[in-house]
Amino acid sequence: MTAFEEAFLFYRVARYDLHGKALLKTNPKEYIVDTGFRTWMAGYRVTDIGRLFENAVYFQLLYEGWSVHVGKLHGREVDFVATKDGRVLYVQATDEMFASETREREIAPLKAIRDNHEKIVVVRQGSYDTDIDGIRIVSARDFFL
Image (cartoon, rainbow, N blue to C red; front, side, top):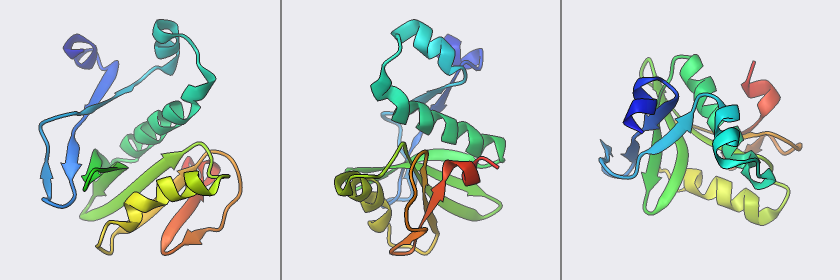
């Protein structure tokens, strides 16, 4: 993996403890630059759409100049904790939230964060309320502008 990272094929993303406000040294996540390479290595699975979308959101945040970590709070994961110019943004990325269970799974980690930084869920498909308990719901079309 180190060789892939040094060749900028994969990006390692450290986890950030939102409770202790510190970077963790364990369980980083990896995001791949070329998802076609991933498909070639592991094969295509229709169930991977959500992971591929999360990968795209990560690189969009990097492209826009954000410093990005994966958030951890009491056993829950926040897909991204992005910082730029003193601004903090918590981001969940999901393919869809049609089922109430999916909606709750994506929103619960953001609800658990007890600060006033912006919280958003980026959704690839479907239409939803634009605000759920102060958490913005953003279409991928609007996020990738």
